[in-house]
Length: 383
Image (cartoon, rainbow, N blue to C red; front, side):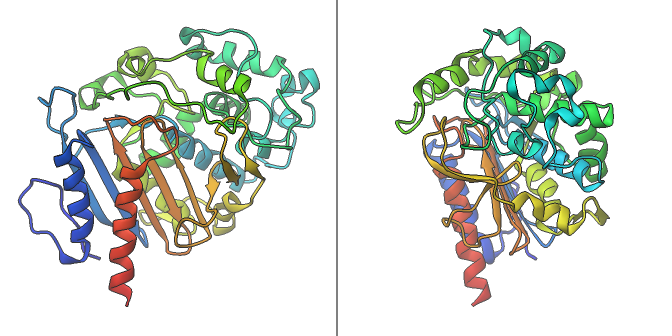
């Protein structure tokens, strides 16, 4: 496969994906993006790898090949992959009650809540009932104990309600009870490190100089009209986190497996090549093909109580509802615009990570514009 080379490094651009590079450069030139990265893999090979712009709002730090950035909820795709890995080894049954692995979770009527319901945002545990602070997010024991003790907000399994912050603690605690290691540690030791992939759930302080500064959107994310206002307010405001928190050592170093991941498009695409290619990446098998395809098993669909839009959730990912080329496609994005797409039929991954944030919570038109440019180029080359 041909490769598009990074913006500005002077190497030739192959004609095949010239439209993708043009779209990327236009976004930087117009100011829609300040700094960004975009990457595509096909059959496990990286075929598009773009980066450019600046890592800071005042445009003094160039965005380099090894620049990394906070991606908010695109982190959830790594958390889901880690859980799928543990399940594929036979240590985790998604259909089992959470309480099998985490006995305290059975409190307050949750004895029958399943791990699959945590993975599909349908457990009724979208937020904390007790008021919590930013500092509480750095206290794993407190954050998880509060969740274990409380009752669901709605009958589990009947609807999804996006578990914006809580999903990482819920799935992470199940993984910790099974493996004896934090989710960030399992992810690092068993996925990121073997692939030499530059994605972190809990960033070492020595890596701080490489992190691009997230540039906040003009205002808070809008509350969707189709959602439950009380639940939306709880998810958005308990605790309320300003984008500036992502620049602190406390946030970057903490393991917050729902929103705390830091990486770039290359890392996201190359890690999810595991799922796109039947469990193998970098010449190594991580999961069985059946273990990968479990992510496609639809658990709940309908209008999400938090996001207010129709979504079909599988195990840890949204499943294509018709707006992507192939049905067996997983995706999710993060607040501000980052995005991961995994097309199992085309054995393709697409990833976008940037520092200038839009108001969206699950990916935006910049990422989809680049994805569409790639799909157009791929379709043209197959004619």
